[in-house]
Amino acid sequence: MKLPIAQTIQILVKSKELNNLKILHLSDLHINKKTSIKQLNELINICTKLEFDFAVITGDIIDCKTKYIKGKLQILNTLKKDEKEIYYISGNHDLFYGLDDLKKELTNFIFMDNDYKKILYKNNNILIAGLPDRFSKFFNIKRDEQKIKKQMLNYASIFISHQPKDYKIALASKANLFLCGHTHGGQIFPFHYLVRLIQPFLAGLFYKEKTAIYVNKGLGTWGIDFRYKADPEITILKLIAKEVK
Image: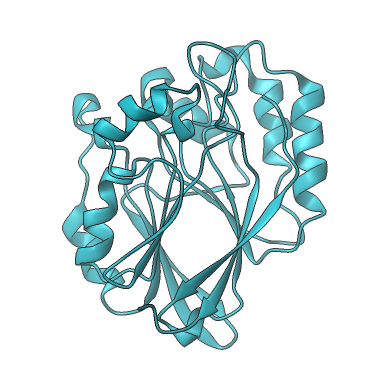
């Protein structure tokens, strides 16, 4: 896990209720036996110096059974600062290596699979909602899309899930912002092209039907512990209320 300098991305959103909201977005940490304690402590130090209203982790937190990395997950648990909430959803690797065990370790975080929360921001109620990863059907976990869509239609909303493919749910729900990960930005060029055949978006910021979409390249790696032309990222997303053309 190579740690980058944190970046700030401005995102145009349609809803004035979200104006100036700052979200810390992390994804795809892939914490495993080889992840160093030093790196995790550095990640916490970087993030706690940043200014944000709440944080989201869009899946794939682990890349091995939790019994081998409990101490490392307890370090991650200290990410919460100044009562700023940390929301997370499942990724395919979390499902494979044991989502229930992961939930037991992340006691300071809020699990958002098939759930939604109202957040009071500048005297306005906004909504954050999440769904399990698309592989959840192989683990007998239902994705309650209708429940999530119905709630998001009533509020200025932020939708989180692991894969960019879920952008259609964001559009159908008229979500102001959709946050995801999974792609690693291709991780190693030229695999970017292969990922792009499978996923509708590779990395970065996009707009569709006035919904902003942000695909985080993540921090960890999968398979080979190497990245090329797909740098890892720690990102603050600053929302700016403006009509998206």
